[in-house]
Amino acid sequence: MSVEGLKEVSEMNRMLCSESEVYLACKRWASKRIESTGKQAKGEEIRNKLGDGIINRIRFPIMTSEE
Image 1 (tube, rainbow, N blue to C red):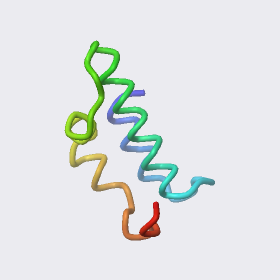
Image 2: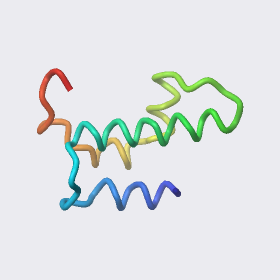
Image 3: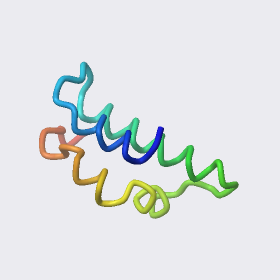
Image 4: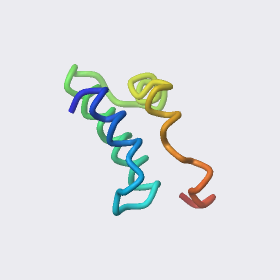
């Protein structure tokens, strides 16, 4: 999936999953993109791959502190 496609999906309000599942899916997407280049996916690299465009679409305030 392209970055633009991920942005569109992350903005959908009618998903049948929790926001933590959206976050984890975005994190997996970024990790796979990084690993496909032969690099190891770490926190900073994952954050950079997602970028503000996707991170800002994840609704962290509705997640519990455990999530």
